[in-house]
Image (cartoon, rainbow, N blue to C red; front, side):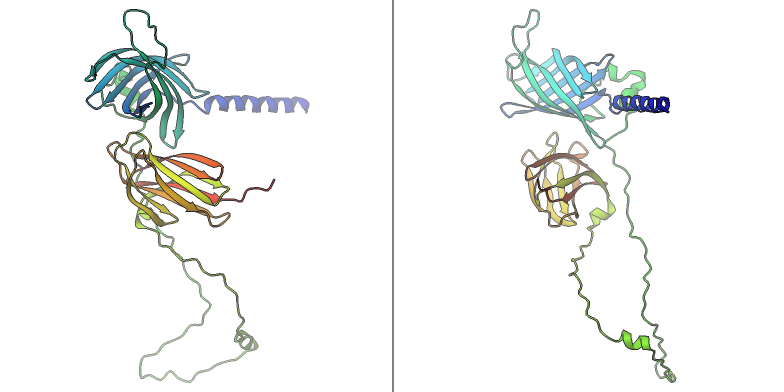
Length: 365
């Protein structure tokens, strides 16, 4: 008996180890596009093309550009530790630079974290800059040439030349990955057909002018009792809100379910990536709150009221357009009392993004 228990325990331990290792096996090989923001608030576009090697190693190239004033390409090397999702990579040297501002160039050291929300994949973190020196030892420290924040999202196509290490084997590394920007087919949900069952008696009608014949009625004791009117207290009915057409015809994909301990909830929505004229409308419990509002670095702010405990409330983001870079992406920050939630939102012209709220009173200590 003890031997069997030991074997079963050993099997469970091996299975738990297996799942802990395999539960996060995502590769960062591919193309990542987004931006970095310097400490002075200036925003540069940024693109990585990277490939994983053995023993956590990563190599690649970076492209950074600021409209027509600056463009640079640099080679990179680093590491990606899957268990911690830490992605660290630094630029070795620039191989192409075009600048109308003059001066030297900087290379960057990136400290990022991999994350995933639905089908979307992200690299986020910070960078430190160091002035580039070629042909001799570099005397500068990381951070001497600025610092800031970085946001990247996995994409399927590059704005530049796709590197050979991503085009090997007939480009299988790039083209065989599922296209996350392609929306799923439209799902039109039809209301179920229901048959009403009534307990009222059938009334026969006869043509005008005809003799309906003598009426025959049979009174029973039950009929006499049924005629006594008993007052019934009914709860006031909630107003019925018709579901807007855009919520019927598009698929409503659940992004997150949140439980809040404060009935007063503040929601802020930002463009999550390059500011590319993404425009949304917002519905709360089928009511239109925001219509055709452009996402930007300034938030769209909503004040929501969770008026019933243990009742689900639904906030739906509808993409009015996909901007210049599909799909329509946004970052939602939710604050309720001391609680804070970050939710990444993705919507298309065929799929709405749904966030579900439920209010629960905090437990008394």
